[in-house]
Image (cartoon, rainbow, N blue to C red):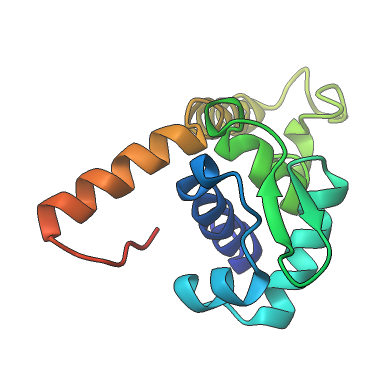
Amino acid sequence: MKFSTRARYGLRAMLELALNYELKEPIPLFQIAERQLISEGYLEQMMNVLRKGGLVRSVRGAQGGYLLSREPSRITAGEIVRCLEGPLNPTDCVSEEDPENCVRAEFCVTRKLWERVRVAIATVLDGATLADMCKEAENLRRSKDADMYYI
């Protein structure tokens, strides 16, 4: 299973906002795009989805930009990925939204495997907050004596 650029870039953009959360100032779109090497147009589309999903808020004007809608410790990677990608479903038969979707559910051996895969992915993503990723970025920065960080 491979996550799209939308999920990967969305996590990077949200991490950028989380790393600047304590400043309590909106981060301009161009700054996020520049630091995370994401096209500004593509980033704008993602930020609109994240805003509609309640994960970020936008501030208009010369000093405008984006802010997290709540503390980094209260936003999980799973929320971000679901907001941008939809439900975590490695196959159609193990939908998060409708787990009884499969007509073969009673006698399908592979469905049990796909369900375990879905649960494992959800557990990892839902167990990682933006605050956790900020700590990881700080550790990486310290260990590499680097100014940039990538996820």
